[in-house]
Amino acid sequence: MNSELNTSLLAGMLKTKRGSTGLRDTAAQIGDISSATLSRIEQGKLPDVETFIKICKWLEVTTETFIISNKEQKVTSSKDKILAHLRADRELDPDTMRMLTQVIDLAYNKK
Image (cartoon, rainbow, N blue to C red):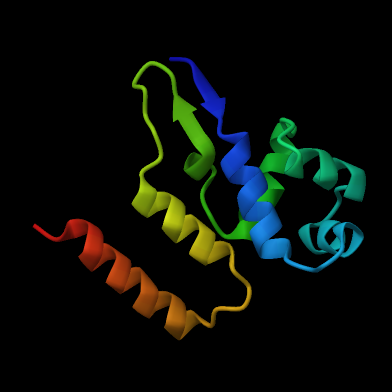
C-alpha cells in the first residue's frame, strides 16, 4: 500500500500552534530539531521520520492524522482536520477543548 504525508496539513497545524512564537523557541520546545528544519516543514517540505514523530507529539496528535493512503484514496475528513487544529491550539484550555470536541462530534454525527 502506498501512502503519502499530508504536508500541507502538517505545515498548517505547526503554524497554528506556533502562533507568534519564533521558530527557534518552537524548535527548542519540540526538542532536538533546528529552526531551519522547522521552517522547511512549514513551507511544505517532507520531514524525516524522527522529526515527524517529535512534531506529532508536540502537536498532541497521532502520526495517522497526516497519512494519506493512495490505495484507499483516504482523505482526511473535515471533522478530523478541525479537531486536529483545535488540539494544536495552545490557547484553548482542556475544558474548552472537550466542549468544542463534543459540539463538533454532535454537528458531524447528526442524522
